[in-house]
Length: 259
Image (cartoon, rainbow, N blue to C red):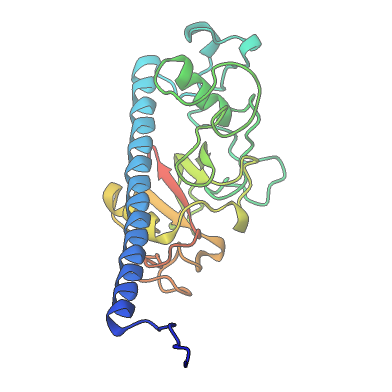
């Protein structure tokens, strides 16, 4: 008797079913990724808006800026040196204009930020927390870190508070007292410390401001201005300064608190 070969290949129907299943799974993965991105956009906007509100309430209550208030230890609950809570200098700027000898005399929005607990940059968050206006940061101790002295974000890194000058020739940069969404807890700006994709950055900008990277109260920058966020029509950026379809991390966002 001849043996029969019982092995059979996929029929066209079976192959179509497999392709359909792969397509459904792929679409589900893409949909899930998009839902995560949209959730982060909404959560970040809510987070920034809560800080903006806290900043304004603090000023209305104490007549000075958080971090900068010169009588913090006299008026804020539990603001004592033992809790690493210190007074500011009252110059209406969060942090120093620029480090001594800096090549950036205007302390541009993307230049380094000193996160040490004794600086106004860190005291900004401690004062808001001790005033009961924000959560998510410690109210004592000198540990430096996202989620400790600096609020963590839904993206890479967290929010620094700083003052930046208007250099006159850099209208694309944020200025005044502002929040900087940066990925480096040490406060330095650089390729490895960007935090947001252009795809999400432009959505945040549109919902909060004008959707343009180099104008308004929400601004974006990347290394060299031309890899996803910054000047218009440079590299892969469109006329509004965003490479809107790019989902890789290429941007740092700056939110102006006052102008």
